[in-house]
Amino acid sequence: MTPGAAGFLLLFFICIQIQSSSAQGSECQCNSTNSRCDHSGLCRCDPGWEGPLCDTCALMPGCVHGSCDLPWQCLCEEGWGGRFCSKDLRACLHGAPCLNGGTCVMDEDGDLTCECAQGYHGDRCQLRAGPCHLHRSACLNGGQCEDSDGFSDSFSCRCLVGFSGARCEVDVDDCALTPCANGATCTDGVNRFTCTCAAGFIGRFCSVNVDECASQPCANGGRCLDRANGYRCLCRHGYSGPTCQGQLTPAPANHSERTLRVTVSERSGAPSLSQTQVITVLTLAIATLALVTLTAALVLHRHCGHAPCRWGRGLRTEKV
Image (cartoon, rainbow, N blue to C red; front, side, top):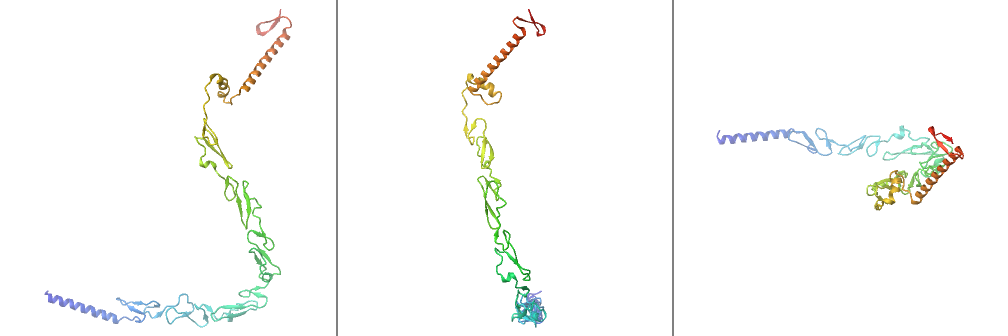
């Protein structure tokens, strides 16, 4: 194919494409004011318009009984009013919403109100002007007044938690049941109480004992015993003091002074005896030995008389 022929074919195809596009544009039926046709022939609507041909206006969002001539309108149908055409303008005619002889009144916006007869009140005149209505603020401290919607001759008060009395005038003592533990001080409030804890206790009710051993106050391997508002250290051998921080000095090794103490104290595990205690024990031992000897001599003397006694077999005695 010659270059001239190739150029002619290219020009031919370009002309066909232009004719096809012109034919497609002439077949588009979209509303030219509110939309445009895309390359596939579909209508692309402008904001506020809808429908296959973009010839239908969009209603205001929330419009109930209305229509539109332009986008975002809400033109109410007959018998309906309000911004969203949702209020029945004929409610006063067929609904009879007002009770106890009340008169129904409708304003231009479709809002309904009731003009109540004497002795009644409420948005629909459903309440009678009873004791609660006549005695404003009959109940104190936020209490709710009740009189059977005004049809009772007397009223009663439903009190909020923390108050009591005929008119909710009494603040209940929340400390009456002694909720605070371990010697804490209770302070009464409005439907609440506060506990001021004694030293060594925490928590809402002061029931949690502070662990003074948590900081490991005992040194040199001492064992800590937690107590109320304090602690005690059990020290290892060779250490002393409140926190076992002191080291004991070894005593001099004197054999003559420690012989009795080792025999009595260290072998038996009992505490060491003082010098006064040792003398007392020895005196009692000597007195006991003398008493036993004297008792034996008296027994022998009574048995043998003045004659000498001879000992034979079986430990028997005979007079000579």
